[in-house]
Length: 162
Image (cartoon, rainbow, N blue to C red; front, side):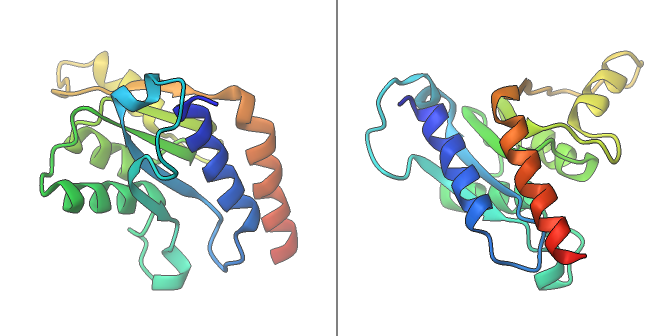
């Protein structure tokens, strides 16, 4: 199993086991060059891991992506995360997209597209076609092979809440 697939499976396993009041969304940060490797060298290749904690902390800023970025930046003692990638269950929202661009992450991988509002792809596409271009754009990868499983787990969570 390659490192990218290993990280994706870890996120989906955490999502499936999530017993929380918050929407079960998770993100992690991993060195981009590790994602190219075919073998997982150790059980935890990431430097930042976070869960969505908006309801638990009563904080609208406590999204998994932002928290994973903060954890990785603290670990590296550097606010710039060039050379690292974010893997997330859901396409990052506009707020988290701003954090991704500010942190200068190389790549963003996600399983489910953002259906409830504009996300990372919208921000990148919109700003590329205007005179106010941003100074950094991550490569964006939709891992569609995980879409069905991730979306089903999210739907199951919301059905339980009703």
